[in-house]
Amino acid sequence: MRLQGVDVIELKINGAVHEFDVDETTPLLYILRNDLGLSGPRFGCGLAQCGACTVLVDGNPVRACVTPAAALSTSEITTLEGLGSREDPHPLQASFVEEQAAQCGFCANGMIMTAAALLERNASPSDDEIRRALAGNLCRCGTHTRILKAIKRAAEGGSA
Image (cartoon, rainbow, N blue to C red; front, side, top):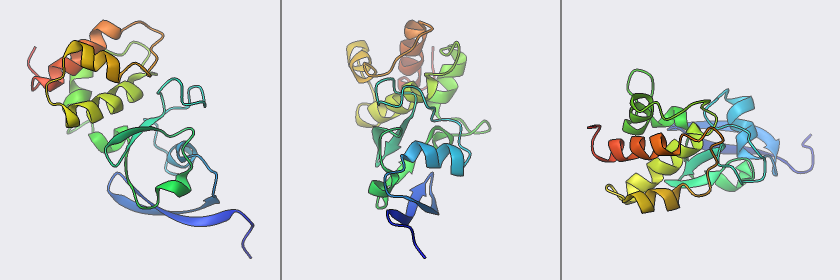
């Protein structure tokens, strides 16, 4: 017997297809963290205001805390874990480490995922373009200068 409003959905996350038996309104973030154990996307504000939960959906930054998972059944979802690994980090992940761009690290997921979408569209963004792209991501530690430097470094192919 199926409960009303509960569906089996299929999601392609980080290249793998997963099935979930969830309420149709379940936010994607809950599935990523609770069902798959992915810790990159974080619960920050729960209102799509801080960016900590950002993932890429078909290459576009999306706030997973307010996006119903059921709406993404035909989409390609990429999390921080799908961008790169410790052994083979994405250039943005490597540059964030090299530039020590994360102090507490809470905003890093949103900053990196948003920057990855930007660099996919514009391989050589200006400082102003980077700032505009990141405007919806909050960093309480104030590492904005290092974050900007890390994104520029990744755009330039990792050189200082």
